[in-house]
Amino acid sequence: MVKKTFDDLRKDQDIIPPPVVTANLTGKTVVITGANVGLGFEAAKHFASMKPARLIIACRSQEKGENALKEIQATAGFDSEKTKLEPWILDLASFSSVIDFGDRFEKDGGNIDILVCNAAVIPNTYQSTVDGWEELLQVNHLSTALLSLLLLPRLKAAASNGSTPRLVVVASNMHYVADIGPEVTSSQNIFNKLSQDSGTYNPDVRYPNSKLLNVFFTRALASRLGASSPLVVNCANPGYCKSELARNVNNDSQGLLAYTTEEGSRQLVWAAVGGEDQRDELKGAYISSSQINEPSDVVLGEEGKVLEGRVWDDTMKILFKLSPKVAEIVGRI
Image 1 (cartoon, rainbow, N blue to C red):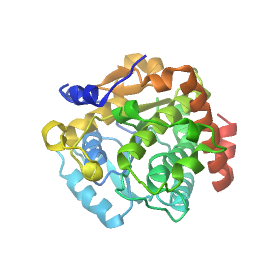
Image 2 (image 1 turned 90 degrees about the horizontal axis):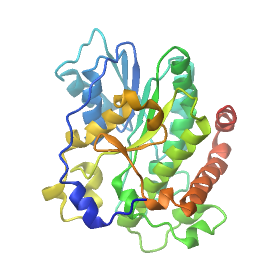
Image 3 (image 1 turned 135 degrees about the horizontal axis):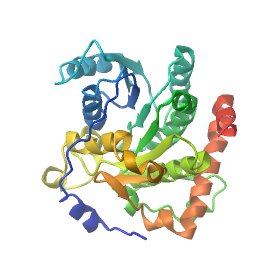
């Protein structure tokens, strides 16, 4: 099992990111959340050069999406005759926005070959969403899980047409230092406890915890889909990158050790199209440095297996109440 300290994570930043992997995405549909800036934007540019039929940029602002679209159109290798760029509105701080996004896809009738759940936040103070949840928890985990499940039928439909679809959740090596204590795990619903305002809000604690939840959700979903499923679900660690996301994290090494967002985006792309000869091993895998890595000992230990089940069950208790479609989709997994 693997246990890493902050010093270990700093040493990991010395690893030079491998070159971006490429694939032929002709005829494919790619969806990326949080794709107007940072990691998502750089990943979108990489995908655009692989000539997918549709590249859907999901972000909170139509204007920002349109601006990102213009920059992607100027990317080397982009072919407007082969790829249709589409900015779609999605606000993960609003469950209704996520449900509307899912409904739009259902009415659209298209399939999804690659879904990259990249959008995340790190507020520097406690913020509550319109739905009453702590913002970081809702955006980074609950809404990410909701979106993944609502779009699962479109990913499965792509598989029925001969594609090998992938769902990538952007996690982080910060999950190695996460600490979800017994006061949380002993509570009736772990998310009610995690969402509470303790009066001492610390993003350096809450963000790693949210990334641990991403790892648990990915593994739980992959496990329930089963080894025979053609759908590959995994999570990717982009490393510590100098981006807008990290502006509220107390880390004095940002300028010295951080990757660029382009370098970090290579891991999102690898998780989405790389390792074709390892397809079975990629299911539920934690991706870092363009290869499968072991997640933390918290994940792999016996207590972690129990917590993974709790994360799934307690997440479903919340999501089932938001939309009857979630229960129907999960029931067909």
